[in-house]
Length: 191
Image 1 (cartoon, rainbow, N blue to C red):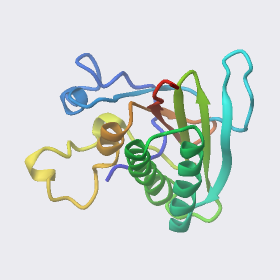
Image 2 (image 1 turned 120 degrees about the vertical axis):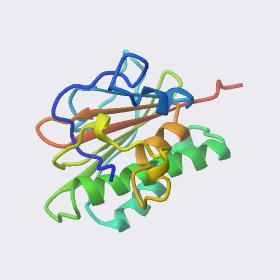
Image 3 (image 1 turned 180 degrees about the horizontal axis):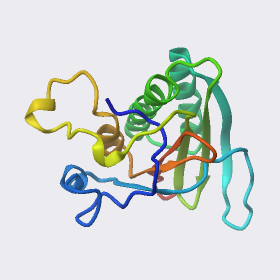
Image 4 (image 1 turned 135 degrees about the horizontal axis):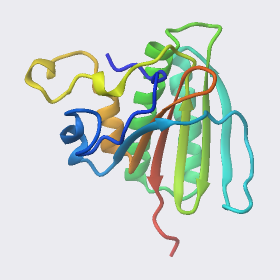
């Protein structure tokens, strides 16, 4: 399984120099999948210096109904900033994978835990931050979904798919608990 929870320590970039042997798994993807220490976003803000526009800042209960609700609201925000239809589908797939991981594997359907979703636009980047309150996982321990003995597994492809559909994916430990997954789609220049 690929839970979307927190990592116990900062991890290196998943490239030739990092995370022991998994670098090749992501090497051919258009996204860079990184991990590092950091804090989860806890509220909306408008950072005038960086021209950050907050599009969504919402807490969702740890239910599968929340997956559909979050996906719908994030897609509305994507449409509002001019994301094309193909990228809408890519964003929807990545968000669905991440939200399911947060609800099922991170928060384990615990009604006392929430999934926070923040969406912003800044400097030509549409950024989605999904934060759970789970126990955690180590990215370098995630099974390689392309390895023959994992091809028919029912789970374990979430991070791989998020990286395939988004331009940038980062996973970091949230403060005080949980994991924040940041999904970024670069926006086409305005004509």
